[in-house]
Image (tube, rainbow, N blue to C red; front, side, top):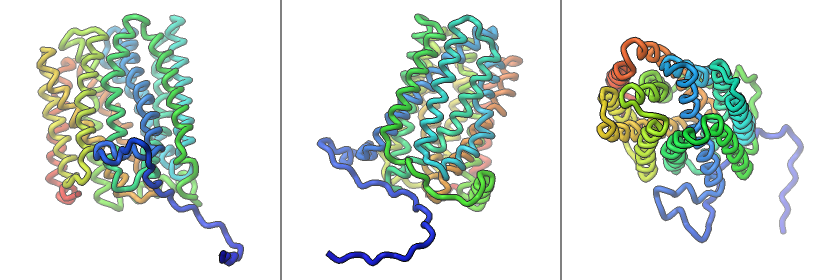
Length: 433
């Protein structure tokens, strides 16, 4: 057999971005089902399972933490906004570091580190609550820790998808990932709301900590993301600067990040104020709040599964803009409702369009960005989500003065109108395919 001539020694080449594996055959072929085609890849199945349990833990923790804060702070919507600040603010500063590390370190290891940290922090919260020494500042401090862990987790988890599936399947894979997240939005809040009745908030925190451990175990089963995508000769700060330069050099990427900022400032304040709105508008208890969140999760799941089934979607820019406008209008109408049955269809709509927006937003960033920049693009996008307190705090303070329903009405109007202004001011964005 002919031998390949030996090459002369020289400097080791930089590793090229990992290529997506070939389709893996099994007795059951996922490839024949367009909606679930990414499940044909073994690593994606494990990544999806890890994301499922991770987001289950996060959603259960969110509803339990909100109920604990209402108990500690006499139903204060401003206190809820402060807790959202504690969780989101670290993402403004730490996400950029997390994104730079995701493009220079094994992404799998960063996800394992962050999920382990979340398990320990939630366990500590449960111990403080169970022992009866929990104070509001404890919740804020642990929220900062959870937010920091999220800053390392999300850029790596999102970018690792492109190492597993080919580019043609990215819309499907990201939509399926978000479908798993939305599935937990159906069961997580409802389960937490009912469990609080029987085992109190401390018991739920212990369960959530255990679920994070399962998320860690599942990531050990993923083979992709075990080696760095590229070897950078710059410092972390240099990589962060290069990421911003790259993002602002492309009008499409700049537009995607800008639109994400608009939705964060005026759409996601709803999540922070939902417990207060439910108490004021519908006078529900923890189990009723869990059901409301579950209904919105059903809408979100329907939206992402519908998107996953569209293999060759056209006019992605217009769909992104349209979903944001519908989101704002639905939020404005929903905020003024005082009947549970009338609130249900609007919760379904808000869940569906917000999830479509998030899935398309992440997909376009992955598709338009170079492989070695995807971690940093996701981290810049996460910085916009870290800006959530910039609206949650003023809207929380506004809710205490004029009521949560009217504060959410203003939020929805601003979301819809600013998206319209953005759409007319950026004709290039509307042409994104």
